[in-house]
Image (cartoon, rainbow, N blue to C red; front, side, top):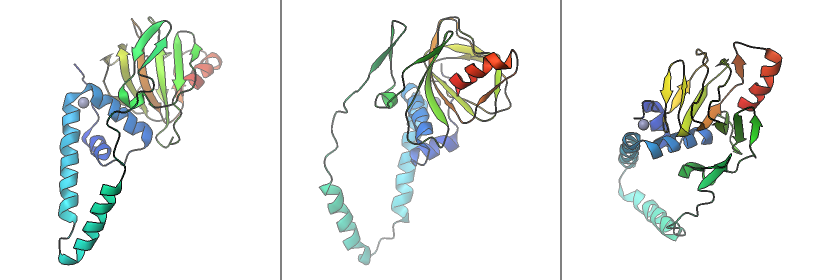
Length: 218
Ligand SMILES: [Zn+2]
């Protein structure tokens, strides 16, 4: 069962479409896995629509404007009924993984590999919330213990990983601040969406070697 969810402020901002693109993607991936957050977002969207309607003053002088808006909407090209699925599945080390719908149209860099950790950076124009990537921890992989100068969001897509604070499964929305030092590891392999807004800081080991890891993670 999914244990970690976006908080109400994030879900509200998602419903209002005011989040940076990378955070929008993260919440969109989560609600593909989480029916209860999907339902909350639907309810928030309904409330927002209601608020907007109530905010519109209804009087005679508004009618032409409303007519204009209606005819403008009707002139818009019809939305395609079926979205072309660009890349429904990806292959990593001979294994096939299904991508969440939210990620299928997002361009990515090729995989960069360091030891048993791989990264494919998402090519987003908007990096205001940080850098987004797909990370793949091979079976038995462990990220050296680190903390953060900023925020770290990790969202498993396939497989599980654990750290000192628990075990995480696909859909878990794990948002961490710079207070936490941890060492993520995966027994059977894990594909994650990751979003960082600052480099990581290693808390153990040899800094020079670990710097290369830091470049890979951020
Ligand atoms: Zn949820």
